[in-house]
Image (cartoon, rainbow, N blue to C red; front, side):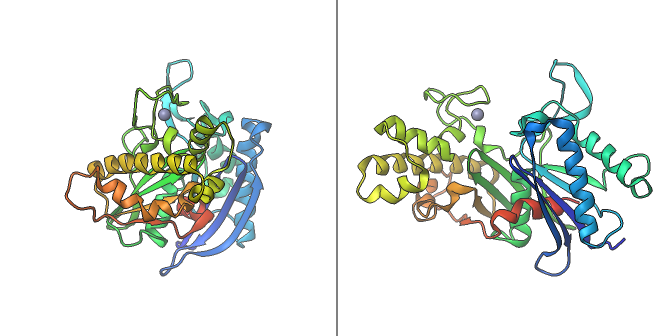
Length: 325
Ligand SMILES: [Zn+2]
């Protein structure tokens, strides 16, 4: 087996992407890439089987007889608590938007499907050095810190502002860049820091006024609708802020909330650099006005932390997954 090869899987809500990557030099070299619909409505067993098949197909596409070390990135985290409250002896998925995975031992079952497909490679079971899992935001932070906007940082924070708000921490160790997932897998989850517990903004996590309810795309659109009675997508709200005072007010509140939320992250982690991803991260005002808004909440008389846009685009998730092992 070529030791420079890795296989990454990005298990998204609508599509699943897999790459075989050759790790050499400063740029990722994609040897093969495949995509398939996730078809989460078809149920848990279907998602397990189609993910295993995608791994086999992309390895074959790369000309390999068996997959190299596999990293899987997906929304959510793991828990050892079963849905009935008892303690599980294998890790279970929680908080995934592919909800059929929640409460299920996806790592174990994908491992089993892979040992059936490749018995001579994996033997009786897939080992920890052969199959790794991480939250998709951690994969984003890892990819940008290895090949993208935060390359060279000792510690960086990757914040995703999209349908939800996620985040991951990457750090440079002796053997390359790694992610920090935390004792219970929630490190970097700034989206569920409560910004204003008195706000009438219930969050799916059970609390009120989470960062996600201020900074996600749906949160911005909700704020605009509550104020005007009209629906508009984030890009349109941003575009009309010159002539629309309501759009301006909504975006002012958004930038202020971003400042408070990211100021909290910086006070805690003090990363060397921050990279933003997700659809909302395309708003120029985050980079034009964001740093000043953040600086007001940082425990220092200056803000030196660069806050930059992602450079790897949509492929960051799958690249980061490939870098997990
Ligand atoms: Zn929440």
